[in-house]
Image 1 (cartoon, one colour):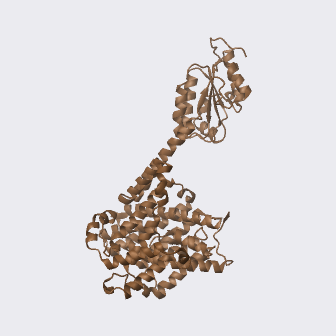
Image 2 (cartoon, rainbow, N blue to C red):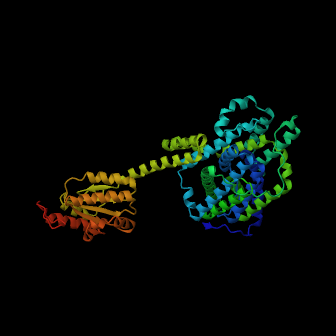
Image 3 (cartoon, rainbow, N blue to C red):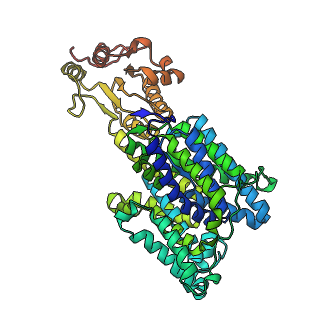
Length: 566
């Protein structure tokens, strides 16, 4: 695969066509997300322009289209609502946009620390759970505008509590427009979808119908006038009493943006057979969100729909993302007045369909058949995401998933910790090694460890060690251990110390690389003399057998036992 995100002009036609197509899709989505967030449609438009431009210019994925996305909008919606409720509209929005800038700073830090490849190393059950939870939140938040009413406040819980009241005051005209919007997007034939985005068709059709078909057109709630021209600069605004929550919100928003962008980058890689630069991509995403926040735009990330359409339309370099941003800029500066008559219900229908699409229906239907533990983790993350908090959901989900994984791996790895005192078919011993064990007549114990020794294996080492009965010498074989964790190292040290204390001969085989360095730091080789640290398992068994046969211990004493014939 080729790692590249250089701007070139070898594919101008494809890149320009990809940019135009992505811009057509971005327009209704940006308006819908702007309104849904509470910051207004202009915030969605500028977020699409600024995040898209700077992420394309400085990012590490050639064909990635970046803009406000459903997951980012859901998180930012809660942030905006919280600060507006506490500080008023103007101050609250300024603080929310400051959080967007801070999220960009976090993303740049992640990129500089080269954490890009670790961002998406999460169990799929957790990713699926919080993405589905975000989709559910977006759907719930569209209930009020879908029914032709303003937000009842209180987020998800407040909306759910207000459903009876919302249903009793439903506005049939706006609900019909919203339902029609969803129907157009959902049921449009694939042949037509290839020619024109269904979201744009729904936006235009809904607006035209609301103006010329319904008799009460003047009562339908609409976007209103969108200011033409460049936005004003918004300076970072902090409040001492809110600083902690701002940092937490920014970290959550930044991490979600990283996950959203890099998952989409992986989709782009599979379609274009290239390989993105994760750390550079985080730098581009961070710069895009900083600039977007400075000018009152929504936070954004890599958008799967826009990226796929861009690639399918011929986009192959960052020129497609740059051209898309410039096309949207022209629309904002020259045709923003046309958006004033767009009904809010139509945008609610578009956003609701996005929420439905975010939900991982495929995995939801079959998760329980794959793993009931994985299904429980996913359902738990969904509930926590919707009803509690995203960071709590991901934190608890990761903790439980990792504990279950460590337990499973530890149980599997524990099977490779074995001790025998005579030839055993379960161990792969050579004929000579088996001969020396047989001649030791049960007085030499062969203690074998193999594979990575993570902390969960320490229990198995202790169990095998505690099971040791009568023997005069122990050969600890760690030849096949590529990595030994601290906890496992301490368990091995404890087994060796106890063997030495009981006067048993101790031989250590195969200590090399990271394993040897770890044992050296534990000063374990002060307890095992250098001549007893060997690289040959056969030689160690041979010396151990001669040792117990002669009856000589390491300190010169003699065992008062009958020696077997060697």
